[in-house]
Length: 397
Length: 75
View 1: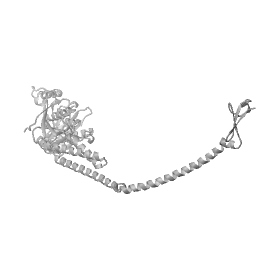
View 2: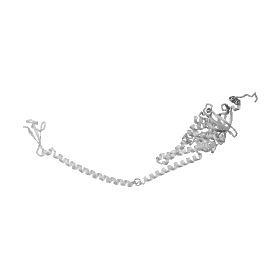
View 3: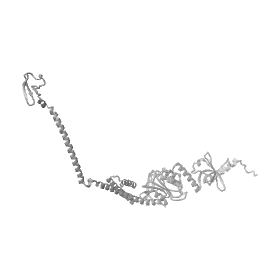
View 4: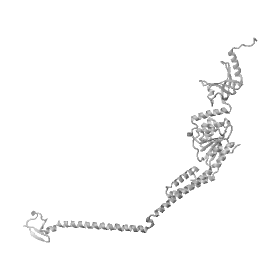
């Protein structure tokens, strides 16, 4: 046993190894690819797992702070890429990877992230059909938020021109892939809304790989589409897969060309529709005229208009009849009146003072008028005595 | 009528045709509605015949307000 070798105690050795690892630049920030196993989330909020590949494994820990930025839930079997520092955990005499960032590795895990986001937004109600706005029938201005290069924008312009040249087309160029794409797309949607530049938005891109169109699965883009007051047609050309943007949008199109078809009517159909309206209004008016003419005809059949002479004769006969009835009634009334008159005259006559005088009565008048009693006249005054036909002059005693 | 949008004109034509088809308006009104409808249909037809697509590029101007410019498809 060489006497020059130091004898370490365990802690010392662990510390030695720790210092070694801490001084290594590579290990201070390294990307590691592997598959998750033995995953456990502790109540503390820290994630503990092992990353393994065919020949080896590596202990990992992701503390709560770093884990809060995770955009997906780590699960056993997931292939991931971790970024962090390798350091010694002296208590266990082991080294582990302290994970700062974790992302899914490969297409399969992109799908997992997609499914998890889709479920989250679905639960929040971002896909609710009750929230979807109707697309205007004749949009005056259409904002197209897409790349200024490539087939998508050309296709949209071409189809819109063929179908409905009346709509003004406004291009808001943005990047449609890469990390800068989501903020640019969000910015354009918000800008269009803020300045009310259009009555309809088409956003999307042409076909590409899953990674290429990932911007349209971004949560920020989804929320901007949801919040938009202007209706949005989402057109991400990648059948049969549907992006998150497609779910949130007010209308989904299979491709950018399809979006243009859905956005506007077809000018040919509209010309036909106008022609039909013209025909219908002409027919309606002709029907009405025909009905009125019929009414006029019916009225003209009536007797008064057909033969005025007969009508008048009828009326004349009626008049004669009425006037003879009138005469008869008048005559009857006159006779009745005459009888009454004669009766009244007779009774009046009977009460006449002249008739009374004829029966021997006389009226005596003195200087002061008719004498009713002896005191009405003084002795020696002249009296006139009126008989029926003559009178006597006398003097009172 | 010149200030009408295509949408407004089409709505009015629809209204007129419905009224005429009901047939209970007095004759003078029907005749004048028919005339109005025919004019509007001509107006819409003219809009369709003379329409030319306008394409612009929209950008944020120096003061933040929207600015339109010519749009060329870049490759």
